[in-house]
Amino acid sequence: MVTNEDIEYGYVRARGYPMYLYSFGKMYLEFYKHTWDEYYKDKFFKILQYIDEIRNDDWTWDYYNGKSSTYKSPLYNCMFSELFMNAYELTQRESYCEKAKNTVCALKEFEVTGCYNGYFYAFVAIANYCSKFPHDKSLVKLGEGFYEYGISGYNPITGEWFYQPSEKEEGFYDGHAAYYELWLIQKFLEFEKEIGAIYPEQHSQLVAYVPAMMERVSQYVLPSGTFWYTEEVPDYTESAGITLLAYELYDDFFGTNHEDIKEKAEKTILERQAPCGAYYKTTNSAVIEIWYSDNIAESLPKYLNLQSNLDHKSL
Image (cartoon, rainbow, N blue to C red; front, side):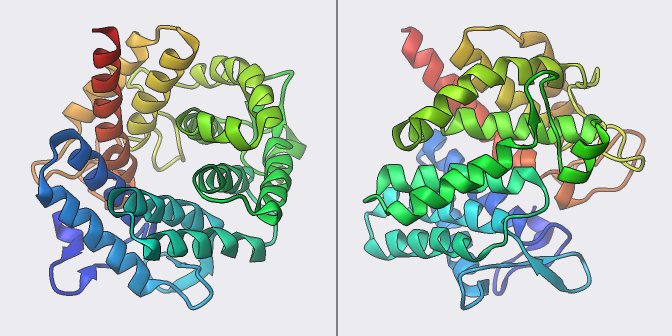
């Protein structure tokens, strides 16, 4: 993390930029909630300032593949609208509310095509925004369309939520798809109250679907609590963060117990951290990439805070 942060100019354009800005923004925010240390709060707001500085005039952000800016993704609008709303909750400054609105409204300009996960996340982002601020009927309607597209990738017979239309057509589902399905389960469970407030019908459908989804996904969890991602990354360290958080949220919501899977993910997170604090992206590798540790940065403090809240509930 430190190697990708420039004190004077912001964050370097490493692989995964600007996605990792969200992950580390959430990391600092969650650590602030956990410790109430102003240091983490200041770091969170510095990231927010930088995100605002690098946005396009149309309230979108460019993906950087290590060479050049290549395309705009709705994922960034979902992520950054969430951070702006977090900032508003901390400060009550209307400027953050306006930034969240502009970021969410920019989703209207995206063509609904490609991977299912990005548009399901857009549905979640709209539910999150509309549950906290006055309803915009056009946004609510837009979210319904995003949901219909996102959930169209799901097969309720097999429990498989495919990654993209071409894979669904071929019936192709692997560890990579399972990993992203688990990420979508996490997003639903993390914002299920907000979804229920704005989209009660979709909420009920998801509650009915998720157990079968989790059963299918669990068949692809490796002994390390991670997932196969590609031939080059057969044991994806970053995915351990999603495993840890998603199964904790699932167990809390459905009253189940997946301690064995969570313990495996915890063990991997502890064992694969490099001396500098970053993570090795897979087994038998000396390569450290921020792209392969951003979900751990986001998920681990969320997991710690969730456990802390559950402990208080039981008292």
